[in-house]
Image (cartoon, rainbow, N blue to C red; front, side, top):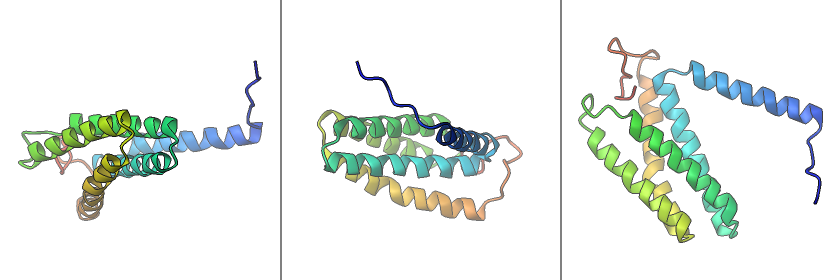
Length: 149
């Protein structure tokens, strides 16, 4: 049985520091910033999945697609349907894309991954634009100004 290779201590230390910085950034992020961070990671996962699918690296593609589904579940769960009248439509889109990603994974269907990217990239850009004009802190009601907790 092969012995797993360990990264050098300096490399592990750098990776640990980077992971801690990422944790700190998430924990200190405003709801608006957290939303844009989630969208950025969602599209990163989808683009990585598309690249893996294009070279038939199904294990990596599956991992990326599943992580994207987890982000969509988080985005869906954070929607406040009673705060924003567009929330129902956004929830429907999240549900559609989640189902498309499940099918993309099961059937190794790069077209569904690409469709998901095409649907979500304009939203990612729109949320970044909205975040740039919204106040940095949460609203007085405790719900972010864009209808997320």
